[in-house]
Length: 383
Ligand code: HEC
Ligand code: HEC
Ligand code: HEC
Ligand code: HEC
Image (cartoon, rainbow, N blue to C red; front, top):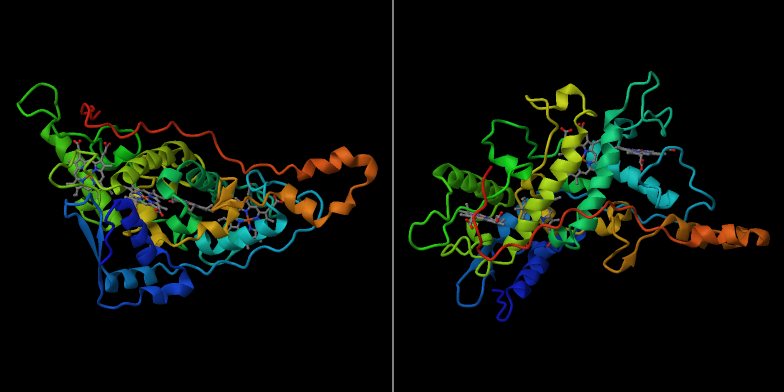
Protein backbone atom coordinates (compact mmCIF):
# COMPACT_ATOMS: atom_id res chain seq x y z
CA UNK A 1 0.00 0.00 0.00
CA UNK A 2 1.48 3.30 -1.06
CA UNK A 3 0.04 6.29 0.71
CA UNK A 4 0.91 9.90 0.16
CA UNK A 5 -0.22 11.53 3.35
CA UNK A 6 0.57 15.11 2.44
CA UNK A 7 0.36 15.53 -1.30
CA UNK A 8 -1.42 13.43 -3.87
CA UNK A 9 1.30 14.22 -6.39
CA UNK A 10 3.88 12.46 -4.28
CA UNK A 11 1.70 9.37 -4.41
CA UNK A 12 1.50 9.58 -8.16
CA UNK A 13 5.24 9.96 -8.44
CA UNK A 14 5.72 6.86 -6.31
CA UNK A 15 3.23 5.02 -8.46
CA UNK A 16 5.10 6.02 -11.56
CA UNK A 17 8.27 4.66 -9.98
CA UNK A 18 6.75 1.42 -8.81
CA UNK A 19 4.59 0.68 -11.81
CA UNK A 20 6.01 2.40 -14.77
CA UNK A 21 9.58 3.55 -14.49
CA UNK A 22 11.09 0.41 -15.93
CA UNK A 23 13.30 -0.15 -18.89
CA UNK A 24 13.44 -3.43 -20.74
CA UNK A 25 16.07 -4.98 -18.52
CA UNK A 26 14.39 -3.97 -15.28
CA UNK A 27 11.17 -5.85 -15.86
CA UNK A 28 11.76 -7.98 -12.78
CA UNK A 29 10.83 -4.92 -10.79
CA UNK A 30 7.27 -5.65 -11.83
CA UNK A 31 7.35 -9.36 -11.18
CA UNK A 32 5.11 -9.39 -8.12
CA UNK A 33 2.43 -11.72 -9.39
CA UNK A 34 -0.94 -11.47 -7.77
CA UNK A 35 -0.08 -8.26 -5.97
CA UNK A 36 -2.49 -5.37 -5.95
CA UNK A 37 -1.12 -1.86 -5.54
CA UNK A 38 -3.30 0.92 -4.21
CA UNK A 39 -2.37 4.51 -4.87
CA UNK A 40 -4.10 7.48 -3.33
CA UNK A 41 -5.15 9.82 -6.13
CA UNK A 42 -7.30 12.47 -4.47
CA UNK A 43 -7.14 14.72 -1.43
CA UNK A 44 -6.92 13.13 1.99
CA UNK A 45 -10.28 12.06 3.30
CA UNK A 46 -11.90 11.67 -0.09
CA UNK A 47 -11.12 7.95 -0.23
CA UNK A 48 -10.03 8.27 -3.86
CA UNK A 49 -7.71 5.46 -4.81
CA UNK A 50 -6.48 3.63 -7.88
CA UNK A 51 -6.05 -0.11 -7.60
CA UNK A 52 -3.55 -1.73 -9.95
CA UNK A 53 -3.52 -5.46 -10.61
CA UNK A 54 0.16 -6.22 -11.06
CA UNK A 55 -0.53 -9.37 -13.12
CA UNK A 56 -2.36 -7.23 -15.57
CA UNK A 57 0.25 -4.46 -15.61
CA UNK A 58 3.02 -7.02 -16.11
CA UNK A 59 1.37 -8.68 -19.08
CA UNK A 60 0.52 -5.38 -20.70
CA UNK A 61 3.95 -3.91 -20.16
CA UNK A 62 5.58 -6.99 -21.70
CA UNK A 63 3.31 -6.60 -24.73
CA UNK A 64 4.72 -3.13 -25.47
CA UNK A 65 7.87 -4.86 -26.86
CA UNK A 66 9.96 -1.73 -26.45
CA UNK A 67 13.07 -2.02 -28.64
CA UNK A 68 16.34 -1.85 -26.71
CA UNK A 69 17.97 1.56 -27.15
CA UNK A 70 20.76 1.60 -29.74
CA UNK A 71 24.26 2.21 -28.33
CA UNK A 72 25.08 5.94 -28.02
CA UNK A 73 26.53 7.57 -31.14
CA UNK A 74 30.33 7.79 -31.27
CA UNK A 75 32.28 10.77 -32.48
CA UNK A 76 31.58 12.21 -35.91
CA UNK A 77 34.06 13.08 -38.64
CA UNK A 78 35.15 16.72 -38.56
CA UNK A 79 33.92 19.21 -41.08
CA UNK A 80 30.54 20.42 -42.27
CA UNK A 81 27.65 18.00 -42.36
CA UNK A 82 27.74 15.95 -45.56
CA UNK A 83 23.98 15.94 -46.20
CA UNK A 84 22.42 17.27 -49.40
CA UNK A 85 18.76 17.47 -48.49
CA UNK A 86 18.37 17.45 -44.74
CA UNK A 87 15.91 20.09 -43.61
CA UNK A 88 15.18 19.26 -39.99
CA UNK A 89 17.86 16.99 -38.57
CA UNK A 90 20.65 19.40 -39.46
CA UNK A 91 21.40 20.17 -35.82
CA UNK A 92 22.75 16.77 -34.78
CA UNK A 93 26.07 15.08 -35.49
CA UNK A 94 26.58 12.63 -38.36
CA UNK A 95 26.81 9.68 -35.97
CA UNK A 96 23.64 10.67 -34.13
CA UNK A 97 21.86 11.15 -37.47
CA UNK A 98 22.75 7.67 -38.71
CA UNK A 99 21.71 6.15 -35.42
CA UNK A 100 18.37 7.94 -35.64
CA UNK A 101 17.78 6.57 -39.17
CA UNK A 102 18.39 3.05 -37.92
CA UNK A 103 15.91 3.66 -35.09
CA UNK A 104 13.29 4.99 -37.55
CA UNK A 105 13.57 1.77 -39.53
CA UNK A 106 12.52 -0.24 -36.48
CA UNK A 107 10.08 2.20 -34.90
CA UNK A 108 8.06 3.04 -38.00
CA UNK A 109 8.94 0.77 -40.91
CA UNK A 110 9.22 -2.20 -38.55
CA UNK A 111 11.24 -4.08 -41.13
CA UNK A 112 14.52 -2.31 -40.48
CA UNK A 113 14.38 -1.44 -44.17
CA UNK A 114 15.61 2.01 -45.28
CA UNK A 115 13.72 1.61 -48.57
CA UNK A 116 10.44 2.20 -46.77
CA UNK A 117 11.29 5.92 -46.84
CA UNK A 118 14.15 6.14 -49.30
CA UNK A 119 15.21 5.81 -52.89
CA UNK A 120 18.21 3.71 -51.92
CA UNK A 121 20.04 4.71 -55.10
CA UNK A 122 19.97 8.29 -53.79
CA UNK A 123 19.25 8.80 -50.09
CA UNK A 124 18.96 12.57 -50.45
CA UNK A 125 16.18 12.40 -53.06
CA UNK A 126 12.56 12.98 -52.07
CA UNK A 127 11.48 11.16 -55.25
CA UNK A 128 12.03 7.85 -56.97
CA UNK A 129 14.23 7.78 -60.08
CA UNK A 130 11.15 8.39 -62.25
CA UNK A 131 10.27 11.53 -60.29
CA UNK A 132 7.40 10.06 -58.22
CA UNK A 133 7.42 11.67 -54.73
CA UNK A 134 8.22 9.27 -51.90
CA UNK A 135 5.33 10.20 -49.64
CA UNK A 136 6.65 8.21 -46.69
CA UNK A 137 9.81 10.34 -46.58
CA UNK A 138 7.86 13.57 -46.88
CA UNK A 139 5.45 12.49 -44.14
CA UNK A 140 8.34 11.32 -41.95
CA UNK A 141 10.06 14.72 -42.21
CA UNK A 142 6.91 16.41 -40.94
CA UNK A 143 6.58 13.74 -38.24
CA UNK A 144 10.04 14.64 -36.94
CA UNK A 145 8.93 18.25 -36.60
CA UNK A 146 5.72 17.15 -34.92
CA UNK A 147 7.54 14.89 -32.44
CA UNK A 148 9.93 17.72 -31.55
CA UNK A 149 6.97 20.03 -31.13
CA UNK A 150 5.29 17.59 -28.72
CA UNK A 151 8.41 17.10 -26.63
CA UNK A 152 9.47 20.74 -26.79
CA UNK A 153 6.15 22.53 -26.26
CA UNK A 154 3.96 20.11 -24.31
CA UNK A 155 6.05 19.24 -21.28
CA UNK A 156 2.89 20.04 -19.28
CA UNK A 157 1.53 16.80 -20.73
CA UNK A 158 4.42 14.54 -21.75
CA UNK A 159 6.71 15.61 -18.85
CA UNK A 160 10.19 14.10 -19.05
CA UNK A 161 8.85 10.84 -20.48
CA UNK A 162 8.24 12.41 -23.87
CA UNK A 163 7.42 10.59 -27.09
CA UNK A 164 9.40 8.96 -29.87
CA UNK A 165 8.02 7.65 -33.15
CA UNK A 166 7.62 4.30 -31.39
CA UNK A 167 5.10 5.75 -28.91
CA UNK A 168 2.55 6.04 -31.72
CA UNK A 169 3.85 3.71 -34.40
CA UNK A 170 4.82 0.70 -32.28
CA UNK A 171 6.86 -0.81 -35.11
CA UNK A 172 4.24 -0.37 -37.84
CA UNK A 173 3.47 2.37 -40.37
CA UNK A 174 -0.13 2.89 -39.26
CA UNK A 175 -0.60 3.78 -35.58
CA UNK A 176 -3.67 2.76 -33.61
CA UNK A 177 -6.65 5.04 -33.15
CA UNK A 178 -6.56 6.67 -36.59
CA UNK A 179 -9.79 8.49 -37.37
CA UNK A 180 -11.43 10.36 -40.24
CA UNK A 181 -14.41 12.65 -40.58
CA UNK A 182 -17.61 10.80 -40.14
CA UNK A 183 -20.70 12.89 -39.69
CA UNK A 184 -21.03 16.27 -37.97
CA UNK A 185 -21.72 14.62 -34.64
CA UNK A 186 -18.59 12.52 -34.48
CA UNK A 187 -17.30 13.17 -30.96
CA UNK A 188 -13.69 12.77 -32.11
CA UNK A 189 -14.08 16.09 -33.90
CA UNK A 190 -13.50 17.56 -30.46
CA UNK A 191 -9.84 16.84 -31.23
CA UNK A 192 -9.95 18.90 -34.39
CA UNK A 193 -12.33 21.81 -34.57
CA UNK A 194 -15.03 21.57 -31.93
CA UNK A 195 -15.05 23.29 -28.59
CA UNK A 196 -16.79 22.88 -25.31
CA UNK A 197 -17.23 19.71 -23.30
CA UNK A 198 -18.73 21.40 -20.26
CA UNK A 199 -22.38 20.63 -19.71
CA UNK A 200 -22.98 20.53 -15.95
CA UNK A 201 -25.08 23.35 -14.58
CA UNK A 202 -23.43 25.58 -12.01
CA UNK A 203 -26.64 26.85 -10.47
CA UNK A 204 -29.05 25.08 -8.16
CA UNK A 205 -32.35 26.25 -9.55
CA UNK A 206 -33.21 26.16 -13.24
CA UNK A 207 -31.96 29.26 -15.09
CA UNK A 208 -31.14 30.16 -18.65
CA UNK A 209 -27.42 30.20 -17.82
CA UNK A 210 -26.83 26.63 -18.93
CA UNK A 211 -28.26 25.90 -22.36
CA UNK A 212 -26.60 22.51 -22.80
CA UNK A 213 -28.90 20.04 -24.47
CA UNK A 214 -29.29 16.33 -23.93
CA UNK A 215 -27.46 15.86 -27.21
CA UNK A 216 -24.50 17.94 -26.01
CA UNK A 217 -24.43 15.98 -22.78
CA UNK A 218 -24.37 12.69 -24.64
CA UNK A 219 -21.55 14.04 -26.75
CA UNK A 220 -19.50 14.92 -23.65
CA UNK A 221 -20.07 11.44 -22.24
CA UNK A 222 -19.05 9.79 -25.51
CA UNK A 223 -15.85 11.81 -25.41
CA UNK A 224 -15.19 10.90 -21.79
CA UNK A 225 -15.79 7.21 -22.41
CA UNK A 226 -13.33 7.34 -25.30
CA UNK A 227 -10.72 8.99 -23.05
CA UNK A 228 -11.27 6.37 -20.37
CA UNK A 229 -10.90 3.56 -22.89
CA UNK A 230 -7.82 5.11 -24.46
CA UNK A 231 -6.09 5.12 -21.08
CA UNK A 232 -7.79 1.95 -19.77
CA UNK A 233 -8.90 3.81 -16.66
CA UNK A 234 -12.16 4.60 -14.92
CA UNK A 235 -13.78 8.03 -14.72
CA UNK A 236 -12.36 8.38 -11.21
CA UNK A 237 -8.82 8.51 -12.60
CA UNK A 238 -9.59 12.13 -13.47
CA UNK A 239 -12.76 13.00 -11.58
CA UNK A 240 -14.22 12.95 -8.12
CA UNK A 241 -17.57 11.39 -8.95
CA UNK A 242 -19.40 13.46 -6.35
CA UNK A 243 -18.70 16.57 -8.48
CA UNK A 244 -17.52 15.79 -12.00
CA UNK A 245 -17.10 19.43 -13.00
CA UNK A 246 -15.07 20.63 -10.00
CA UNK A 247 -11.40 21.12 -10.82
CA UNK A 248 -10.35 21.66 -7.22
CA UNK A 249 -11.72 18.24 -6.24
CA UNK A 250 -10.27 16.40 -9.23
CA UNK A 251 -7.04 14.36 -9.17
CA UNK A 252 -4.07 16.10 -10.83
CA UNK A 253 -4.38 13.74 -13.81
CA UNK A 254 -7.38 15.76 -15.01
CA UNK A 255 -5.25 18.85 -15.56
CA UNK A 256 -2.72 16.73 -17.46
CA UNK A 257 -5.60 15.43 -19.56
CA UNK A 258 -6.80 18.97 -20.20
CA UNK A 259 -3.41 19.90 -21.67
CA UNK A 260 -3.63 16.65 -23.67
CA UNK A 261 -6.87 17.75 -25.32
CA UNK A 262 -5.24 20.95 -26.55
CA UNK A 263 -2.15 19.08 -27.66
CA UNK A 264 -4.15 16.56 -29.73
CA UNK A 265 -6.09 19.39 -31.34
CA UNK A 266 -2.86 21.21 -32.21
CA UNK A 267 -1.36 18.04 -33.72
CA UNK A 268 -4.45 17.35 -35.81
CA UNK A 269 -4.89 20.94 -36.97
CA UNK A 270 -1.29 21.86 -37.67
CA UNK A 271 0.50 18.62 -38.50
CA UNK A 272 -1.72 15.70 -39.42
CA UNK A 273 -4.62 17.25 -41.37
CA UNK A 274 -2.37 19.47 -43.53
CA UNK A 275 -0.55 16.35 -44.79
CA UNK A 276 -3.58 15.52 -46.93
CA UNK A 277 -1.99 16.48 -50.29
CA UNK A 278 1.06 14.34 -49.53
CA UNK A 279 -0.71 11.01 -48.95
CA UNK A 280 -1.79 8.64 -51.70
CA UNK A 281 -5.59 8.40 -52.03
CA UNK A 282 -5.65 5.00 -50.34
CA UNK A 283 -4.59 6.60 -47.03
CA UNK A 284 -7.38 9.22 -47.01
CA UNK A 285 -10.79 8.90 -45.39
CA UNK A 286 -14.16 8.60 -47.11
CA UNK A 287 -14.48 12.39 -47.18
CA UNK A 288 -10.95 12.86 -48.50
CA UNK A 289 -9.34 13.96 -45.22
CA UNK A 290 -5.98 12.84 -43.83
CA UNK A 291 -5.70 10.34 -40.95
CA UNK A 292 -5.78 11.99 -37.53
CA UNK A 293 -4.75 11.07 -33.97
CA UNK A 294 -6.55 10.80 -30.64
CA UNK A 295 -5.59 9.89 -27.07
CA UNK A 296 -5.44 6.20 -27.99
CA UNK A 297 -2.79 6.85 -30.65
CA UNK A 298 -0.15 7.50 -27.98
CA UNK A 299 -1.68 5.85 -24.93
CA UNK A 300 -2.62 2.49 -26.46
CA UNK A 301 -4.79 1.58 -23.46
CA UNK A 302 -2.22 2.54 -20.83
CA UNK A 303 -2.48 5.32 -18.23
CA UNK A 304 0.90 6.45 -19.55
CA UNK A 305 2.12 5.50 -23.04
CA UNK A 306 4.43 2.46 -22.79
CA UNK A 307 3.69 2.50 -19.03
CA UNK A 308 5.97 5.51 -18.68
CA UNK A 309 9.08 3.82 -20.12
CA UNK A 310 11.75 6.46 -20.74
CA UNK A 311 12.74 6.01 -24.40
CA UNK A 312 12.97 9.63 -25.45
CA UNK A 313 15.96 10.52 -23.29
CA UNK A 314 18.15 8.24 -25.46
CA UNK A 315 17.22 9.96 -28.76
CA UNK A 316 18.17 13.66 -28.85
CA UNK A 317 16.99 13.93 -32.47
CA UNK A 318 13.38 13.98 -31.21
CA UNK A 319 13.81 16.19 -28.12
CA UNK A 320 12.86 19.63 -29.40
CA UNK A 321 14.41 21.00 -26.20
CA UNK A 322 17.92 22.28 -25.59
CA UNK A 323 18.34 19.72 -22.81
CA UNK A 324 16.64 16.61 -21.43
CA UNK A 325 16.85 15.84 -17.71
CA UNK A 326 19.77 18.27 -17.57
CA UNK A 327 21.70 16.61 -20.43
CA UNK A 328 22.46 19.29 -23.07
CA UNK A 329 21.41 18.82 -26.69
CA UNK A 330 24.40 17.47 -28.69
CA UNK A 331 24.46 20.12 -31.38
CA UNK A 332 26.67 19.37 -34.38
CA UNK A 333 28.70 22.55 -33.83
CA UNK A 334 29.85 21.28 -30.46
CA UNK A 335 30.51 17.79 -31.81
CA UNK A 336 32.67 19.13 -34.61
CA UNK A 337 34.56 21.49 -32.34
CA UNK A 338 35.28 18.61 -29.98
CA UNK A 339 36.58 16.27 -32.66
CA UNK A 340 38.69 18.77 -34.64
CA UNK A 341 39.77 21.71 -32.52
CA UNK A 342 43.18 21.99 -34.17
CA UNK A 343 41.96 21.88 -37.77
CA UNK A 344 41.31 25.62 -37.97
CA UNK A 345 44.05 27.66 -39.63
CA UNK A 346 45.00 30.69 -37.53
CA UNK A 347 44.07 33.22 -40.19
CA UNK A 348 40.51 31.99 -40.20
CA UNK A 349 39.92 32.22 -36.48
CA UNK A 350 36.56 33.97 -36.82
CA UNK A 351 35.21 31.32 -39.18
CA UNK A 352 36.69 28.56 -37.04
CA UNK A 353 34.90 29.89 -33.98
CA UNK A 354 31.56 29.87 -35.73
CA UNK A 355 30.70 26.16 -35.52
CA UNK A 356 31.42 26.17 -31.79
CA UNK A 357 28.34 28.32 -31.25
CA UNK A 358 25.96 25.45 -30.66
CA UNK A 359 22.66 26.04 -32.41
CA UNK A 360 19.62 25.23 -30.36
CA UNK A 361 17.45 22.44 -31.71
CA UNK A 362 14.86 23.66 -34.12
CA UNK A 363 11.54 24.03 -32.42
CA UNK A 364 8.43 25.62 -33.78
CA UNK A 365 6.72 28.68 -32.47
CA UNK A 366 4.90 27.89 -29.24
CA UNK A 367 1.28 26.85 -29.67
CA UNK A 368 -1.47 29.07 -28.37
CA UNK A 369 -1.37 28.41 -24.63
CA UNK A 370 -4.49 26.62 -23.49
CA UNK A 371 -6.36 28.71 -20.98
CA UNK A 372 -5.90 27.33 -17.49
CA UNK A 373 -8.84 25.15 -16.54
CA UNK A 374 -11.55 27.56 -15.44
CA UNK A 375 -12.91 27.40 -11.93
CA UNK A 376 -16.33 26.24 -12.92
CA UNK A 377 -17.22 28.96 -15.30
CA UNK A 378 -19.75 29.27 -18.08
CA UNK A 379 -20.54 26.22 -20.12
CA UNK A 380 -19.23 26.84 -23.60
CA UNK A 381 -21.22 26.42 -26.78
CA UNK A 382 -20.84 23.10 -28.42
CA UNK A 383 -20.70 24.31 -31.99
C1 HEC B 1 10.55 6.48 -41.47
C2 HEC B 1 11.24 7.00 -42.62
C3 HEC B 1 12.75 6.79 -42.75
C4 HEC B 1 13.45 5.61 -42.66
C5 HEC B 1 12.91 4.22 -42.34
C6 HEC B 1 14.83 5.94 -42.95
N1 HEC B 1 14.95 7.28 -43.22
FE1 HEC B 1 16.65 8.25 -43.80
N2 HEC B 1 15.62 10.00 -43.90
C7 HEC B 1 14.29 10.16 -43.61
C8 HEC B 1 13.96 11.56 -43.68
C9 HEC B 1 12.58 12.17 -43.40
C10 HEC B 1 15.14 12.24 -44.04
C11 HEC B 1 15.29 13.76 -44.21
C12 HEC B 1 15.46 14.35 -42.81
C13 HEC B 1 15.43 15.87 -42.78
O1 HEC B 1 15.06 16.51 -43.78
O2 HEC B 1 15.75 16.42 -41.69
C14 HEC B 1 16.17 11.23 -44.20
C15 HEC B 1 17.48 11.50 -44.61
C16 HEC B 1 18.46 10.53 -44.75
C17 HEC B 1 19.79 10.79 -45.24
C18 HEC B 1 20.36 12.12 -45.67
C19 HEC B 1 20.48 12.20 -47.19
C20 HEC B 1 20.91 13.58 -47.67
O3 HEC B 1 22.07 13.77 -48.00
O4 HEC B 1 20.03 14.47 -47.70
C21 HEC B 1 20.46 9.61 -45.20
C22 HEC B 1 21.91 9.35 -45.59
C23 HEC B 1 19.56 8.61 -44.71
N3 HEC B 1 18.33 9.21 -44.45
C24 HEC B 1 19.86 7.29 -44.51
C25 HEC B 1 18.98 6.31 -44.05
C26 HEC B 1 19.35 4.93 -43.84
C27 HEC B 1 20.73 4.36 -44.06
C28 HEC B 1 18.23 4.29 -43.40
C29 HEC B 1 18.06 2.81 -43.00
C30 HEC B 1 18.93 2.40 -41.92
C31 HEC B 1 17.16 5.29 -43.35
N4 HEC B 1 17.66 6.49 -43.75
C32 HEC B 1 15.86 5.01 -42.95
C33 HEC B 1 13.39 9.16 -43.29
C34 HEC B 1 13.70 7.83 -43.10
C1 HEC C 1 1.36 11.45 -32.11
C2 HEC C 1 1.55 10.18 -32.79
C3 HEC C 1 2.67 10.07 -33.83
C4 HEC C 1 4.01 10.20 -33.64
C5 HEC C 1 4.74 10.58 -32.35
C6 HEC C 1 4.63 9.91 -34.90
N1 HEC C 1 3.69 9.60 -35.83
FE1 HEC C 1 4.02 9.10 -37.77
N2 HEC C 1 2.00 8.95 -38.09
C7 HEC C 1 1.03 9.24 -37.15
C8 HEC C 1 -0.27 9.18 -37.78
C9 HEC C 1 -1.59 9.45 -37.09
C10 HEC C 1 -0.04 8.83 -39.14
C11 HEC C 1 -1.05 8.60 -40.26
C12 HEC C 1 -1.11 7.14 -40.58
C13 HEC C 1 -1.42 6.88 -42.04
O1 HEC C 1 -0.53 7.11 -42.88
O2 HEC C 1 -2.53 6.44 -42.35
C14 HEC C 1 1.40 8.69 -39.29
C15 HEC C 1 2.03 8.33 -40.48
C16 HEC C 1 3.40 8.23 -40.64
C17 HEC C 1 4.04 7.79 -41.86
C18 HEC C 1 3.31 7.35 -43.14
C19 HEC C 1 2.85 5.93 -42.98
C20 HEC C 1 2.11 5.39 -44.20
O3 HEC C 1 2.56 4.38 -44.76
O4 HEC C 1 1.09 5.99 -44.60
C21 HEC C 1 5.39 7.81 -41.64
C22 HEC C 1 6.47 7.43 -42.60
C23 HEC C 1 5.59 8.29 -40.29
N3 HEC C 1 4.36 8.53 -39.71
C24 HEC C 1 6.82 8.46 -39.69
C25 HEC C 1 7.00 8.91 -38.37
C26 HEC C 1 8.30 9.16 -37.78
C27 HEC C 1 9.65 8.98 -38.46
C28 HEC C 1 8.07 9.58 -36.50
C29 HEC C 1 9.08 10.00 -35.45
C30 HEC C 1 9.97 11.08 -35.83
C31 HEC C 1 6.63 9.58 -36.30
N4 HEC C 1 6.02 9.17 -37.45
C32 HEC C 1 6.01 9.94 -35.11
C33 HEC C 1 1.23 9.52 -35.81
C34 HEC C 1 2.47 9.71 -35.22
C1 HEC D 1 -8.19 11.13 -18.61
C2 HEC D 1 -8.95 11.99 -17.76
C3 HEC D 1 -10.47 11.89 -17.80
C4 HEC D 1 -11.23 10.75 -17.71
C5 HEC D 1 -10.76 9.31 -17.59
C6 HEC D 1 -12.59 11.19 -17.69
N1 HEC D 1 -12.66 12.55 -17.79
FE1 HEC D 1 -14.34 13.68 -17.75
N2 HEC D 1 -13.21 15.37 -18.06
C7 HEC D 1 -11.84 15.41 -18.17
C8 HEC D 1 -11.43 16.75 -18.50
C9 HEC D 1 -10.00 17.23 -18.72
C10 HEC D 1 -12.61 17.54 -18.59
C11 HEC D 1 -12.72 19.03 -18.91
C12 HEC D 1 -12.88 19.23 -20.39
C13 HEC D 1 -12.96 20.70 -20.72
O1 HEC D 1 -13.18 21.51 -19.81
O2 HEC D 1 -12.82 21.04 -21.90
C14 HEC D 1 -13.71 16.63 -18.30
C15 HEC D 1 -15.06 17.00 -18.28
C16 HEC D 1 -16.11 16.16 -17.94
C17 HEC D 1 -17.49 16.56 -17.80
C18 HEC D 1 -18.01 17.98 -18.01
C19 HEC D 1 -17.87 18.76 -16.75
C20 HEC D 1 -18.55 20.12 -16.81
O3 HEC D 1 -17.98 21.09 -16.27
O4 HEC D 1 -19.65 20.22 -17.40
C21 HEC D 1 -18.21 15.47 -17.43
C22 HEC D 1 -19.69 15.39 -17.15
C23 HEC D 1 -17.28 14.36 -17.36
N3 HEC D 1 -16.02 14.82 -17.67
C24 HEC D 1 -17.64 13.07 -17.06
C25 HEC D 1 -16.79 11.97 -17.17
C26 HEC D 1 -17.23 10.60 -17.06
C27 HEC D 1 -18.65 10.14 -16.80
C28 HEC D 1 -16.12 9.82 -17.22
C29 HEC D 1 -16.01 8.29 -17.27
C30 HEC D 1 -16.80 7.69 -18.34
C31 HEC D 1 -14.99 10.72 -17.42
N4 HEC D 1 -15.44 12.02 -17.38
C32 HEC D 1 -13.69 10.32 -17.60
C33 HEC D 1 -10.98 14.35 -17.98
C34 HEC D 1 -11.37 13.02 -17.86
C1 HEC E 1 1.62 12.58 -28.27
C2 HEC E 1 1.31 11.45 -27.41
C3 HEC E 1 0.16 11.63 -26.42
C4 HEC E 1 -1.16 11.89 -26.74
C5 HEC E 1 -1.77 12.08 -28.12
C6 HEC E 1 -1.86 11.92 -25.49
N1 HEC E 1 -0.99 11.69 -24.45
FE1 HEC E 1 -1.47 11.60 -22.48
N2 HEC E 1 0.49 11.28 -21.99
C7 HEC E 1 1.52 11.15 -22.91
C8 HEC E 1 2.75 10.88 -22.19
C9 HEC E 1 4.13 10.66 -22.81
C10 HEC E 1 2.42 10.83 -20.81
C11 HEC E 1 3.34 10.49 -19.63
C12 HEC E 1 3.77 11.73 -18.87
C13 HEC E 1 4.46 11.35 -17.58
O1 HEC E 1 5.42 10.58 -17.62
O2 HEC E 1 3.97 11.77 -16.53
C14 HEC E 1 0.99 11.10 -20.74
C15 HEC E 1 0.27 11.18 -19.53
C16 HEC E 1 -1.09 11.37 -19.45
C17 HEC E 1 -1.82 11.44 -18.22
C18 HEC E 1 -1.22 11.36 -16.80
C19 HEC E 1 -1.21 9.96 -16.31
C20 HEC E 1 -0.68 9.86 -14.90
O3 HEC E 1 -0.90 8.82 -14.29
O4 HEC E 1 -0.05 10.82 -14.41
C21 HEC E 1 -3.14 11.61 -18.53
C22 HEC E 1 -4.32 11.71 -17.57
C23 HEC E 1 -3.23 11.66 -19.97
N3 HEC E 1 -1.97 11.51 -20.49
C24 HEC E 1 -4.41 11.83 -20.67
C25 HEC E 1 -4.47 12.00 -22.06
C26 HEC E 1 -5.70 12.28 -22.78
C27 HEC E 1 -7.07 12.40 -22.16
C28 HEC E 1 -5.36 12.38 -24.10
C29 HEC E 1 -6.27 12.70 -25.29
C30 HEC E 1 -7.00 13.94 -25.16
C31 HEC E 1 -3.92 12.16 -24.20
N4 HEC E 1 -3.42 11.93 -22.95
C32 HEC E 1 -3.22 12.17 -25.38
C33 HEC E 1 1.42 11.24 -24.29
C34 HEC E 1 0.25 11.51 -24.98
